[in-house]
Image (cartoon, rainbow, N blue to C red):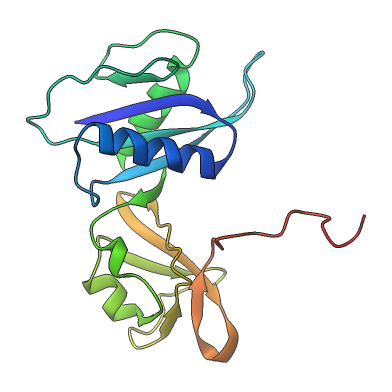
Length: 184
């Protein structure tokens, strides 16, 4: 069962905080699969970030806190309904969403080989940006403790890029420099 969650979060950090808060409130284990999803602007709605959480099949029907919209199945409503539906739909189809929580994520710190990263987590595929093929299993990945795979074609996939010393690094960095920060 997939729960779509939308509180109109403006940033990834805000959405990740919401995701962790809801997962704790529902008593989910820290490795429950939880994702963020970009919701585009439409009409008078600003672009923002919604979330999704995979619930166990035997989970009770949860009640959302004030100011949060979520959807289970076909039950939807309110101004954030489109974001909840988008998040739940992408997660269920395994073709959209950026995983924040997932099995094995706590072990993905420091430098690991591609093989160790795949064996020790729910990540099933590693792709190198602008490369035609997968990386060698022995190639090292410097995680910086920030590993955010994405659902692509039904597979939890970690996009990586070349890094210093022949290593790879996750394509998403933990604290990106804002555009134009060094030239204003």
